[in-house]
Image 1 (spheres, rainbow, N blue to C red):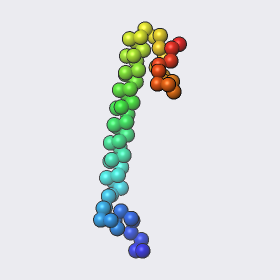
Image 2: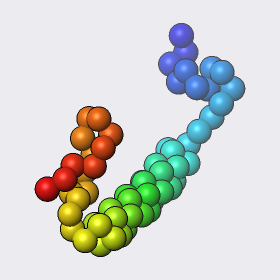
Image 3: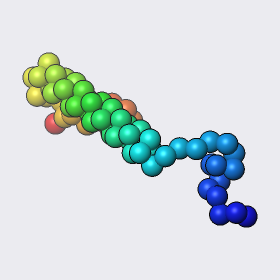
Image 4: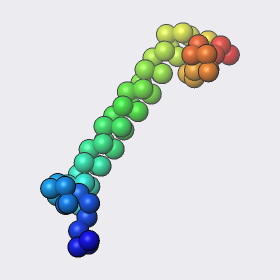
Amino acid sequence: MSGTPHAEAEGVVVSKVQVKREIKTIVRNLETILGDLKDVAKELKELSGGRWEAGVQHTGAWKQL
């Protein structure tokens, strides 16, 4: 062993900067998805007149308050 990372041994070299950029992109995408899900939950609550809790039971059905 020469002390080289496993990825280099396979011919793939990725810098820490590239990894950080990818992680930041993934985090931004997840934040966008979370925001969209919150918007959908809010719309569902408004459409149902507040009769339904914005949560799903194990059965997959909406839980009535």
